[in-house]
Amino acid sequence: MNTKIKQIANTLNGKEVDMTFITNPTTMNYLTGVEMDPHERIAGLMIFPDREPIFFTPALEVEMTRSKVDFEVFGYVDSENPWKMIKDKVDSFGLNVRKIGVEFSDITMLKTEGLKSVFSADFVNLAPLISRMRLIKSADEIEKLIVAGDYADKCFEIGFKAAQKPGITEIEIATEIEFGIKKLGVPGMSFDTIVLSGARAANPHGVPEEFVVEQNKLLLFDLGVIKNGYVSDATRTISLGKPSDFDREIYNIVLEAQLAAQDYIKPGVTAESVDKVARDVITKAGYGEYFTHRLGHGIGMDIHEYPSIVEGEELVLEAGMCFSDEPGIYIPNKVGVRIEDCLYVTETGANPLTHTSKELTIY
Ligand code: MN
Ligand code: MN
Image (cartoon, rainbow, N blue to C red; front, side, top):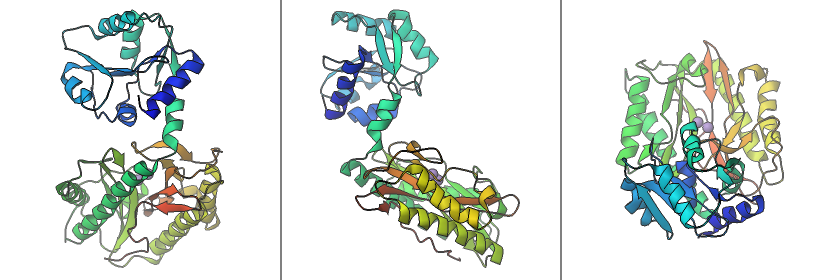
């Protein structure tokens, strides 16, 4: 039993929870190193207060799972009833299950109904405990986040080069980035690559289309990869040809806000105060109403984790926390600018995980 699983087992003891049924693939990976997505099949990590855990998986995942964990793994074939097998296994331990810990944010109704069909038990939410455990990254995790960040920088390099080809579209640039980075050994993107030209970037959730990128306009890239189970997420806005004075002014305000937050972050300050530092810059410049989202989100194995860098989040920052610093100004039908780095908090400040220049670069 590793230290993370032991920590959960100890917590179960205190809360009189008899077992867990952990279903979130990211949590399974975090706790055991097993990378598996069972899709609609049933997989659950079962941790108990007073005995070794067991891992229940589809039969086709049993061998792979056994190679990663040092405790019992058992599986079912598609023609078997998984819930009955789970119940029989637990009965063989002589356990009377009254409370089951699950992640309310992940488990489906179908699976809770499955558990209820064999156990007369109440459910307890494990998600807050697991979020707290994942909040402070170990040195090893930060190392993996640094690697994922380096690949995001490489994506920008590929994308900025592609953007200079005459007549290229947003979707073609996004495709070149993803093709190029996968050739370097990256298994996947952490989300679909965003490339948006000119006023189209005023939609913070815009998607690239068959739209030829405009000259003398800004071009926004938001992207990230997954590598070794950890993700990156970064945004740069560049200019193709000479930007208008207005676009340049907006860009410089966003950059000032982004850097102000980066310089301010250190252990002991609250998450909401970081948001305020960046937001004040944009508000004082007169564009507060166009900064329509929180400053940032936690990052790690998932693209959005705890903590949220937002007004009302009083969490005090500590070394090892990782999150994004991504102010933006989005003026409909005019311009959209966002600049984003994820950072990890150090003993004295914060280090960004991406290093592509943030000065307005003109291609
Ligand atoms: Mn982000
Ligand atoms: Mn992003």
